[in-house]
Length: 471
Image (cartoon, rainbow, N blue to C red; front, side, top):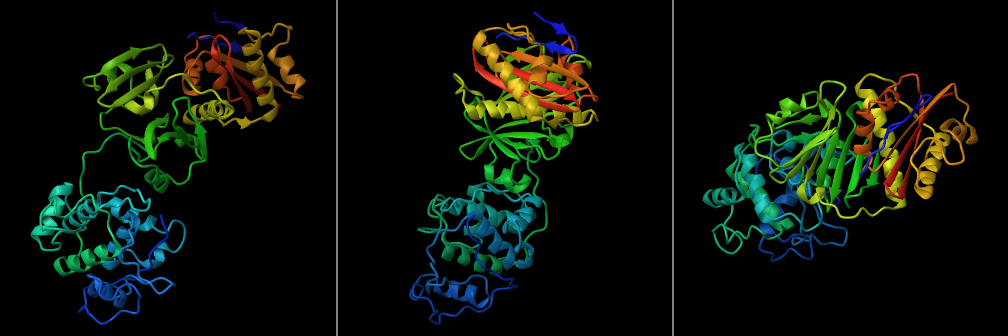
């Protein structure tokens, strides 16, 4: 049942490690076997290459008098050494902020194969080979073909034998091995390729694709404005510093498992499906799909290993106004683990979604209001506890009474409520597709403040309240 009272509306829904210090070098100098001033390098198999690196100020030792040639390095350290060895990124450019960002920016711009994962001990010899071959040749390699190129060009003789398997692709890379690679690569290749490596692009949001690493996400977009819980078990990284480019990224096990945004400029589609397109046109581009679901507010389908949900605007020609993409793992959920953290997350997301919707339509953003939020949460809790769904509570108090009781003085005010939606995104698009005023409230430029409140439990599981007003 839908209900309208004054300007109050209702909808009901069932239901990296520290940087090594390097300086620019130009070409390999003659290497010397003279003893090094380190307690752990004399007699080491890579002593001559370490000596070269020290003489060229490519690497240095540690305060305890050691060089630690067998210490494992990560991708950022390897990439920094490679680029500095060829004089491509000045040392000074990495002096502030995230020290390795200039190196990643350079390599990513050329399409070099990067993982953006920099946990200690995670960088493999096979990954090093792939990066070296790609950078030297300016073209795409598989890991196996990259290793074979290093062997064929005598840049490497492998770890146990001069074969792909003998290269030990899964082995972790040490400092000594990395310096040896760089010396021999510079003997072979005087300059790295400046050619951009083309790849088959997937759909990205803000340059981030499903299954990218969380480290790549933060290196590309910076730290999120907020990290929220989700009902699916992953965490949402929220980017809301600009509501015209509002983005949410689901992250689990250090991988991106979900993408959501209503910002057309932030999406890059590999299929042609995009914000502003009619759902009929989008269906022509989906190809073979499974588990398709047509709803008043969205069209969802599975393609490959991804679950796609296209949120539509029934009031504007069934155009797409929001896209949610999830991995199959990310989209699977059992009974949601309702918690205080999830309650707060839903409340903040309902607020963000309202402002993102308004920003995309050129409508002034709403200000967060604690008093309105208190009134909204009180009403959601009351509906859950006393098992009703209405603006007027069993005591006869209206939304306006409840706002006044919180000390709010207003010129105009309105309330939206919803129940039964699995999360804030679905609730938002339920309001946007309402025929009874919720959409008008969300998009009313005369309303300037908003507070939201969520409650879990009761017959609908989740209750949502938005209280708007203008002082």
